[in-house]
Length: 364
Ligand code: HPA
Ligand code: ZN
Image (cartoon, rainbow, N blue to C red; front, side):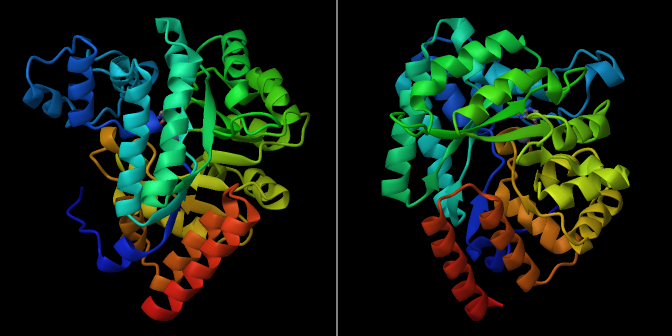
């Protein structure tokens, strides 16, 4: 997108990805194959029509712009999940991402998954989670990409449904006696009139189990800054979330930037996702400002690459490198920040930081 090629430097940079929805990595080819395997009808007669559907920009919001008949981004994303039915489907989706991650020199990832999208279709939690867990284990062995996953509450569905989903998923959590697939909970989907505090009970449960917490505060949504305020100052009995996904509107209010800095809450940013809606000379100066600010850590991620013009983490990094005018050393520092923002265990973090140091000596 925008004619930027991935430079050899960005390609080789060791990476950590902390904001990628596994369902947002479903390629048209895998979707087509799974639809046929599972006899799931697609609203596209041919593969070319399916491919063409991915060219739509998906950047309008019905609540804001009205219904123009075209699907929104989230409608398209959840439509894609319909082809995932059997354990092998989830496994193959996970493996496809981890293989692609290996090819981009991603060493460690914390992918989100939306279990709640499958249970109403009668798919068992075990089907979804055993599939992802096999990918987690095999992906680490075969591709050398370690991962700890994050279960998202779907915020535009009832809170009680989210809590029931968490209870179904709990045996796969990284808790004593658990399988260790996921080590955190998040909050995703449409945040229109769905502030983080609605999910206080759900987050408290996960926190009591010893899991990490993160929540989406999408960019330029209605009440975006208020949602960030809650995520910093109100949730979890006022302690605040550990991380915020997106959260770029913190730049709109000084108290939000101060809160992020003083509480040490980092942002997982997805520059290409914002570039779909913001002009180059509007967006990248904001990221440059955030880069120059002391105290607020952030890292670069892809979000939903197959539904966002096939721009993956390497493409998102290339954009920041190019349009923010950062140096090679700055980009290495952003990768280092991603390691520190991650919830990888201390041993892996130390190994990744050492690798980045060697990389910097050689390539910067
Ligand atoms: N925003 C909110 N929820 C999501 C997204 C997103 O971009 N992608 C998948 N779930
Ligand atoms: Zn996201």
